[in-house]
Amino acid sequence: MPKPKWAGDDLLSRLVNVVINSPLFDLLREGARARIKDTAEKRGVPWQQRVFELEHSEVFAIKDEIEDKQLQYPQYYTRAFHGYKEGNLSWLAALEAEPATDVMALLPYAKYEAELTGPAAQVRLRTSTLVAIRRHAAEHKLKEPKAVLDAGCSVGICTRWLAGEYPSAKVIGMDLSPYMLAVAELRERQWEQKRQLQLSGASPLGADAAAVGADSIPGSTKRQRITYKHGMLEQSGLPSKSQDLVAVQFVIHECPAEIISQMIQEGKRLLRPGGVLAFVDINPNSSAGRNMPPAVATLMKATEPWTDEYYFYPLEEAMAEAGFKHVECHELDPRHRIVLGAKL
Image (tube, rainbow, N blue to C red; front, side, top):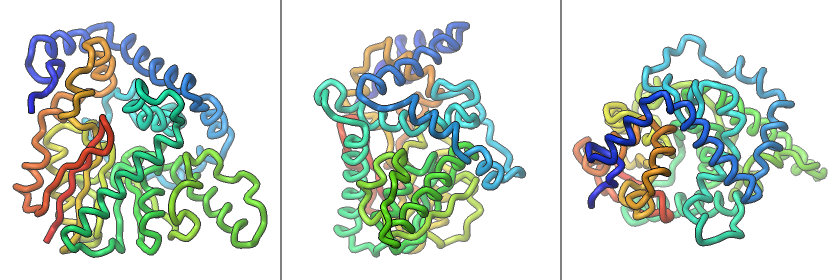
């Protein structure tokens, strides 16, 4: 299927890249971020309220607890992206990640469902993801995961959904940003407090209210505690054959092609026989992506420096070549897809 003209070596793509690499880049980056925030406020996502609540929490102290200060950041991760000069290695990116994720879930429906809320869009996206994983496992007679790695977990939204879906599983959330992990760990501590209140029969008193749809997550009060780890999937440091499901959600569009290939190989190393590697991300073949107006594409590429490499990366073929079986791609919504493969 043809890729969009704003990606690759087409004239339009070259013009977009010239603009992005010009002195206008900082203005474009701020413009893209402002567009996301504007979308959030118009659709009832309390952006500023969530940021304010985190600013007045223990999240800053948690970062010092969870950060691996010996970790060397790869060069691709230190570039500016997502509208932030320091990328994900900043407090502002972490404090705004939850409402920004709501906007990401809303975007596929923005023109068609004016009343759809951020939490409802989250439920729709996460549910379709988990249904696809379960259907793939059922069709190919794969076992229920007992150990799950959510690689590139950000602030833990995807991780909590995985933990709720597989309440008996040991779940690890891994990310390169200690700032994002601090928010994820804060939410986990809030979840623990709420669960203790529920078990004691007391009122939850609104605990975890900002944890992005936490009350909608199946099994959320029965699951095991999530362990968060500062690290990267391409060099995870975890034992071989230690995982049954490795999920990589909304990560690889932020990575150069060689890193995606390394992630596939590391995912294979980590998985036990019968385990599954699942990538959830932007669908390069969606009509929404192919028909994106040049002005919008320019704003997007201003925040996503590896877009061209991702759009032309043959993910399904690369997984098959690495030895994965039952490699399948399924549309999750008009903008996103899941690609799954089993290690047999």
